[in-house]
Length: 327
Image 1: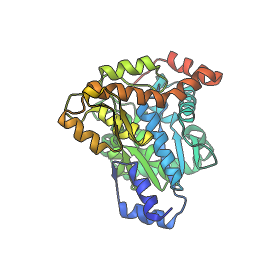
Image 2: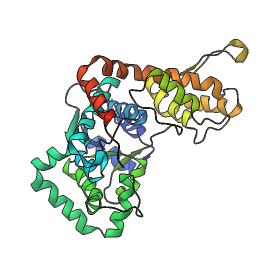
Image 3: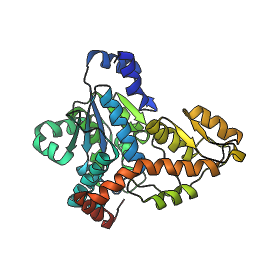
Image 4: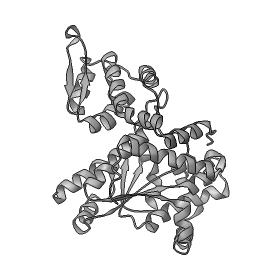
């Protein structure tokens, strides 16, 4: 694989990239760069989190990257997820890993590593806490408070003292893991002022109700049927975002099945062609939604099968569904 090909793959996972020239230079000098990606075990997994992370990780490993996935259990506790119960948070973490295995994240070899924050920090506390202290000393409190959106909170929220540690710790994680590339969500912009090289990704969401990775076929069909999808409107249309960010990258095509009187079948190989037809009205929500449901159900079927047939996975899902989700 050429340097330009590697760059295109790594760059393709993000909507934005800070310092593209430095990313190119990094890939030229370091054949196996370390990529950081983290998540809070905080409840059931939305399809955007499940499928997009699998797609992104597989792209990164195909370009030679080593991916460290930070299971932020201590961070979830700081953020009061699962009522701050670390044992429940750990169960959720194992459940999420089972989903990524089932959906097709490439976990063969040693290119992908899951690391539990509590265990890693405890084992190397002498390295970690000086980093946190240094970051805290270098930043004023108002600046740290502005970073609280990384927790899904705002400066106006009533925060505990523990939650103020969160931005300092997330910043420290990147140095602690010796990460070369950090792929974070677009809601993580303010943490970029504390750390440097970023690939920031966008996660689409159906606005009516969340599609979860182990939803049954009928549930997916109903949620897509009810989803916001205005005719001839492409921008901020969540159904089209699912096609753009999930279906097309997964299948490399999107198939519409309809009668000859309604225009006949059509297969789209890229989003631009689909968007053009949707804007003119030659493709409408009544045709698009069933095709979208079919594609998503095909992606999710291996996950359903895994949680149905694997006893460990089945028990994890039962426990996670019984937990009360707390903000």
